[in-house]
Amino acid sequence: MNRRQFLVSSAATTSFIAGIGFAQSSVRALPILPLSDFTKGIDARIPLTCGFGRHDFGTGNLSDTYGINGSYLGPVLRVKQGQTLPFDVKNTIDQVTTLHWHGLHIPGDVDGGPHQEIYPDALWSPDVPIVQNASMNWFHSHMHGRTAQQTYKGLAGVLLIEDDASLSADLPKTYGVDDFTIILQDKTFDQAGKMSYELTAEVFEDGFEGDTMVVNGAIAPVVQSVPQGLVRLRILNACNARFLELSMDTGPITVIASDGGFLPSSVETATLLMSPGERYEILVDMGTSDTNTLNVNLNGDGGFLAGLFGGNAKTPALTLMRTSEAGFTGAMPQRLANLAPAKASDATVTRSFELQMDVGADLAALAMVWENVCGNASAMAINGLPMKMDRIDEKVRKGDTEIWRVSVDDMLHPFHVHGCSFRILSQNGSVPPAYAQGWKDMVHVEEGWSEILVQFNYDAPSDAPYMYHCHILEHEDCGMMGQFTVT
Ligand code: C2O
Ligand code: CU
Ligand code: CU
Image 1 (tube, helix red, strand yellow):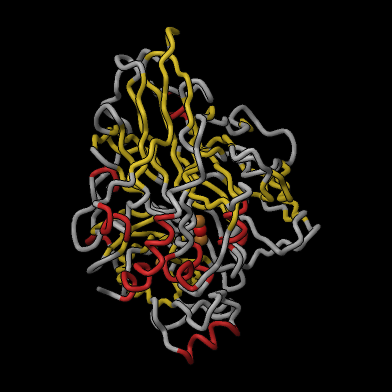
Image 2: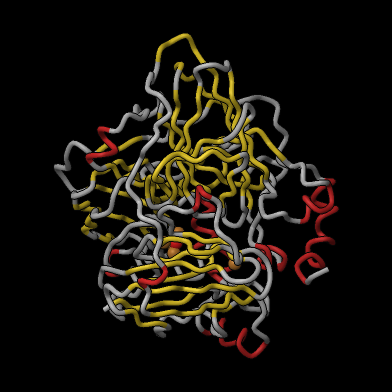
C-alpha cells in the first residue's frame, strides 16, 4: 500500500457510506451555455466580467458561485483563426484573479497566467491573436495559490476556434442543436444543497474530488433531445482533480478531435480517459438508436473506490433522445486533418521534469513564503523546487524543437504546458492511445516517463513567462508548477 492509498483508505469508508452524490430525484435538461459567436466578425471590445453569482445546480437551493458574464461559468466564445480578440476582462469579485487562455498559442504577456493579476474592480485588456487551427480551448482563473477555489466556484469557460476548414467541414455544427459544448465537473453539496469545497489534508494530497457529477452546471444525469443523424459533443473535463473515464451505452466512442484540434481521422475507442484540463470532441450516431447515454466513471484514475468496490462507479452524465426531426445527414467522416507523425529526431534539446508530492519540511516552509497554498505543512514541487513567482526555471529558445520528459514520485498527474500544442511520444512508457496521438497540451504521467515533442513559437519574457504544471489544481496551488521563458 503506497502512501496515497493509505491516506485515502481511512477517509474512503465514511464518504462512501454517506452515499455517492447529492440525492438525485429528477432528471434535468442539459443547460446550453450561452454562445457568443464572433466567427462573422468582431465590432467592439469583448467584455468578460468575473463576478459573484448564485446558482441552483438542481438541489433546489442557491449556491454561492462565481461566473463570467453570468451566475456560473462563462459563455462559449466561438471565434475564427486570424482574428485578434480584444478582451476587456473585469474583476468584480473580492479577490485578485487572472484569466488564462488554456490551449492558446499566444505570447506570454497575454497568456493570463499568474503574472497578469487583475485586482478587484480592475480591468485587464489583452488583445489575443488567434493563430492556431480549429480547436476547443478554455479559459479559467490562474491566480497563484487560488486557482483551485476560484475555478471550482465557476471562473471557467470555453473558447472554440474555427477555421476555414472546420467551418466548411462536413460535420454537425449547429450550436445547441447537433453541436453541444459539454463541461464536466465534480462537486460536493452540503445538507442544504449548497456547493461546498473543503480543503482537508487529504484534499491536498489527492486534489479535490466531489461526489456529484455536474454537466454545464446541472447535476447529472441531464437529457437533451436531438435530431436524427450525427451529433457532435465537444467535451471539457473541468474537474479540479478527477480523471473521468467516458463510455457510451450503445457502443464505442468516436473521437474526432483532441486538445489542439482534429485527429487525422476519427478514432473508435470503448473508453475515453480524460484528465482535468483535457478536451475531446466526439460524434454520436443518433441515426439508429432512440437514446444514447454518455456515462462517466468517476474513478478514471483507478482510485480508491475502484479498488474497494470493483471499479463500478459509472454514472450516466448525458442522455441524448432522438426526435423525429431530420438533422445532420452526412456520414462519419473519414479524413479530418493532415497530421504528420511526430518525429522525435527533430528535437535538439531534452529537458526532464519530476513532479514531486513530498518535498520535506524545510522546503515546505519556503513554499509557504513563496505563496503556495497547501493547507498543511507539506508542499509539492517540480525538480525539487516548489513554484516561485520570481524564479525562472527553464529558458527555451524560440523555434527549437524539444523533448520534455516528465516523471512522478507518486500518483497519476495531468501535466500541462502553456503557449503551445505538443505531440505525445510516449505516455507512462508506452505509446499513447490513438485518440491522444494528435495535438495535445495535456499528458498523463504515472509510471515511467511520459515524453512530449514540443516547439514554442511565441515570446514569453521573464516578466511574462509561461507555466508548466500539474492540472490537479490543488497540486498546482501547492507548488507543483514551474515557469519558463521563450526568447
Ligand atoms: Cu489550464 Cu496553466 O492551465
Ligand atoms: Cu494553460
Ligand atoms: Cu498533481
